[in-house]
Image 1: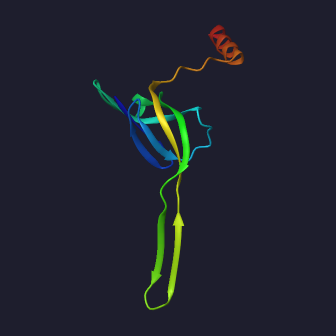
Image 2: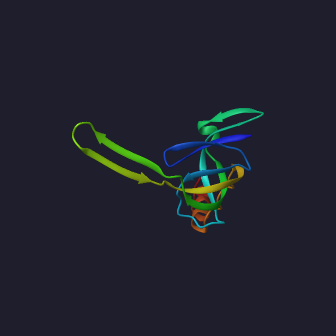
Image 3: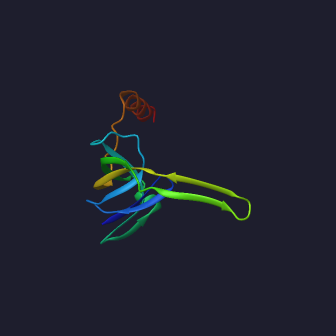
Length: 122
């Protein structure tokens, strides 16, 4: 089974146990994070859209770091114009622990009373 989720305007294809690098997240190492799923695929077939509305990818943060340095060199011929810059993109390395539906949230006491009042009114 695999799932596709979106983070930082990028989409990632993951399976349980994968370790991937995503855009930097403000989450401490060892904590878990959830991502909404766009698509899932397993032996039953592919599910997209409303079929995966409650499905989440759960991952554990392994580490934070910076990618390999890239050089950005801007140059204009015959103008003696040169600009050299380096860039290291920060990332968060995560390990996928689960792919599946999240448990429905329990109703608050106020919402439960409102539902009971509506049922009694009918």
